[in-house]
Length: 321
Image (tube, rainbow, N blue to C red):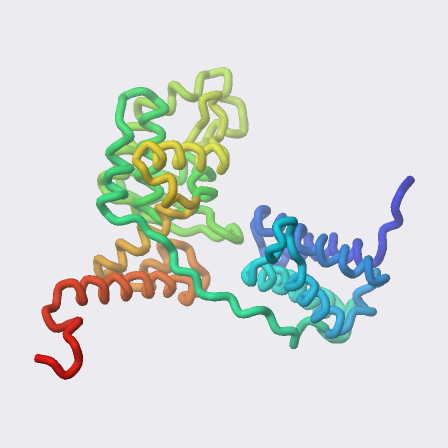
């Protein structure tokens, strides 16, 4: 039995195409938008609303309150403040699209407030911890050469795992020490890598990659990929994350690990070393400087901790010499 496509369903599909064509959002981002809009659509359908023209500000506000009130099987809140805020961003994107394309006269989500989200502070590894992680990957076999290159490049460049596995051979310029990275929204940027990462990448490309890419895989679309799996195909994000997690566990860092831990560490250590904030913004591919400024809070807290531990009067009792 087929289900009739409602006006809302059709506009959801058009919104997805608009995100790709007009805003140039990456597939992963659009997938997340679709997931959030399906949840919004279920809420609207449950309230008998199948046309955005029937949605008012009160409905959007009710949806936000619905998410706030939802609880999981453990009796805890089902959605965090960050998740609800992101869901509202997606709802606003949809209704603004409807206004832009002439499907609605006004945006019912415009004045609906999102829950306050505490600013998160990235948890960076120390320089010694990163060195321990990197130095623990040794050996001449292809997998070890690849894994060492992956970790070195992630830390040296601050790139995302998705950007790393998307690298093609023609994006690597070892002589100049730059990689051409395709970031969010299909925006390209040049990312420098230092001598240690260049050496690890050169060793992998010279002695490891050819073993992972036997001739029978040469005609695949993955033939130009820099990082390959054991079958000679392009390494996936999940496969790369598994590699990082494996070596972090061996270094005793598995409880400190997130998919972006080396990215966070790269940014924090560069700012600690005196790098300009806008240079770090360009390196990481942040669209807004405010995103990069999160890292300044990390370094400021570290500065205060070092100061209070080292200065003889930093913790002196007031009124006492």
